[in-house]
Length: 267
Image 1 (cartoon, rainbow, N blue to C red):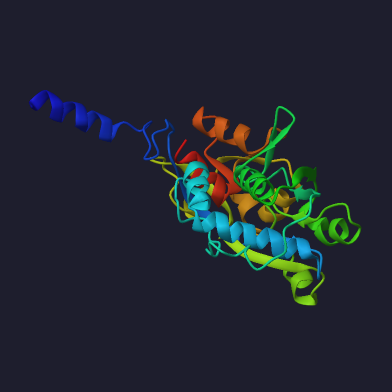
Image 2 (spheres, rainbow, N blue to C red):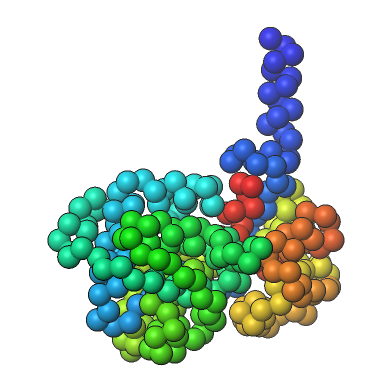
């Protein structure tokens, strides 16, 4: 019995074991730079909107959304979609078509490319939707700043995958919004147990960040932050490379998304 208790104590104290069963160091939020939410966007008056949103409601009622949310984010309730098992029943049978989804691939773990394929929480759910509707799916890389242009030009049927819509465009009614379905703030994170627990502890610290315009814009929202930090490194490898730097002890903080923090806290 004593031996069993000792083993359990060691497992509980080990910093590399996380709640989701993966091995990671665990990270904590230090500062919020930008508050934002992810949504889907469709062309106004496009029937695709009715079918896709109904299919999402069916999948949510079946527990698929909760399953994917737990898989990618470690929280089955992180993704918020309405549940309705019969949502497709009042719509005509969907015709065969190609469903083109525009994704921002700099949005790990919601949307990214690995070995030439689109992956992520949003990509996996989009595939489930297409399968349910009997549609062929095609993914298209987009910049979230160009959602209206991509939709209005017909390049995509839906913007979905790490897309934080422009509030001004939503207010103008340039397209139809579905959501938001999750909060995804741009934040600074540090390893659990580090001496950096809030923004007042950032003086002289090393920070890494993705080499995207969105990350740079987020950094510039706090005029004092760049002066407070000792070193800022922009990495072309994106979110995963940033966290590799953090885990290797090559930096003190990472500029990232709150959904990425959720992912790395359970993988």
